[in-house]
View 1 (cartoon, rainbow over the protein chains, first blue to last red):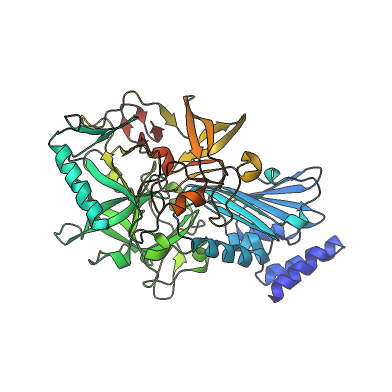
View 2: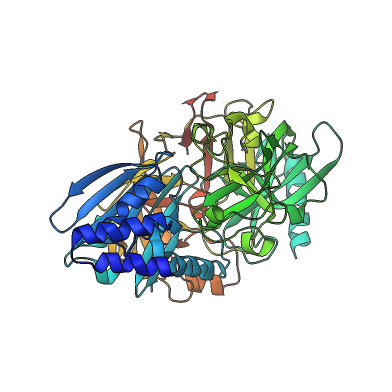
Length: 162
Length: 396
């Protein structure tokens, strides 16, 4: 909890060097909050997931694309210094606890709640006020994304998060 | 109720096996769109019903016999879900009365965490001789689903909900008869990073490499004969039904009852996907999956089809939607698919278990079990040749 608070603090920090400093503190404490966290925390993800990184600036946001050793590609969407969405596609899911950071618990509880309605096997579609998460596919191919609606820059649509 | 259903099925098969009023020869039970093979050494009976919990919508189940390798210590496990979306046999330990030998790795016993979209299965990798109908595979690595032998690692539980009990899984196990032979393939032999395979010394489980030959494997690929794929054959379901019967046929072009002739072959990309075109857009992450229980595609915003409020994860249009899409293989072949999506809550309230028009939101197009109704769907295993070419591909 303490660590998540630090990451959130870093995200709000106006000075980039201080934000990075805070993120490094977070790294050393093994916290990798990314969704809703600072853009600098993408670097923590890269390290944790042993991934290569490609950065593509777009008009309303920047896409940080990580390629994991498994071949799965993770895209992190950042605007105003904050990661507002993440997406993944590839043979196996990434570490979603790492990727969703402080939102993971909300996600996990929602996933567990939906499995109570045992009507067979189907994709994940979670729409909560503070978090939207979807995942489909099959073993050897998983495709999904998650975003924080209130942090989406104006005019950005969900279908851009891929 | 379930035993009555089974008796009916046995009776039906027995009658058809005699060639009486079933079309003659080895083919039987014609309906409007496809012919379902009955009987035969390479044919396992399958049934769509509510499963062991009597709560499963659109689940297709089969019985699988597992034996301690090279012994006559065997057990037939009923109600195992037939899944063309994965590969390998997984059985709940609570459904097993025999003890199978444990696979050993360099630093300890091997366990697996297999992520599915709907959750994960966890448990030790053990070895069994596996029989279906008259086919047998020896020394097959299987997953015994069990959270008590080794505790579930946190990286595993992060994959989602635990499908490690009868109530959560809704079946006694999964028979993965998908396009792949081994469940993970070369990725898990080269990196432990997907966190699928683990070795569990007494100090605790750690992610580990797993050679392809040791991985949990589609038993069909290890049959001595008829090992290049399967055909899943189910009748059409035009209105909700409590149960339907069909066949899982082993081999493609290896016997007189599994020829590949008029069907269209759809080859796939490295992920096992083809492209589905819908309303002018192409979706290249599309696939066939008997283990998904509906047509799962796109979302409410894109399709204009309303989400359910009670049966979340399904579509609930006020009137049944009749839709058209086109599937395109990586080989350039294409074919139109007409499909319907009805109100899921209305369907579930009918107290049936087979629904031909159940759908919901998803990524790209996940053609689940409703797609298989009224079709004979061929699943050609990777690297194995058959009269249509070399797998992996789908044909229907």
